[in-house]
Length: 114
Length: 112
Image (cartoon, rainbow over all chains, first blue to last red; front, top):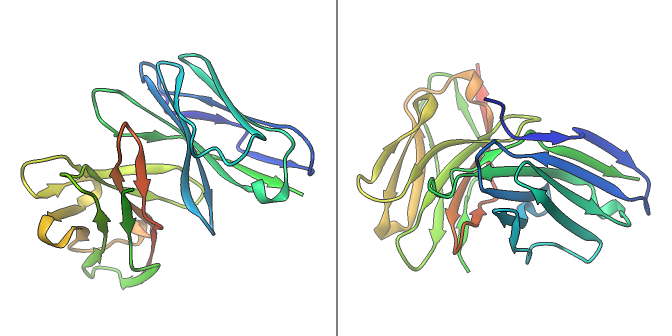
């Protein structure tokens, strides 16, 4: 069974550009989480979905960040416009609702904004 | 809000030695607690979890953790460390809903 899939694995872009990160959760999982990891702030939850509906986006840092989950097998995290301080590793994770918080993480996308 | 403290940023142990990584949490009710491991360049992998019942929980890769309510702690242990255990370890507590709050992490280095 494939794990959580994220693409791209690495992204280098210039300040002001739009960045789209993609995630495919494990089939059958009904929760999806987006995290950001930096040296300064550690691992932060940005937003999570249940059954494709955003439940809590209080961790989204600014209006420049947006996330969607158009169906159960795909989610995107978009940054527009990107800034150098957005440089981080972004993780997607998914879980079953009946196995509370045993979250399965993807390999992450390392974003560098120049 | 709930919080998790991992007091040790770095720990170095010799291969074959025992290991204990500390974790303290702040939570009003009975917490759901987790330990995750992150190898370089990879995502986090669940090592073990505590929901209720026996306060000593066993996980993968020979790890165990003990929940101590009186000390608000959930320390991770391993009797004999292998070089492949070098990684970063995160303690986490479940907050309301399905949110996890992570500690800052402890980087484990293993000396040969």
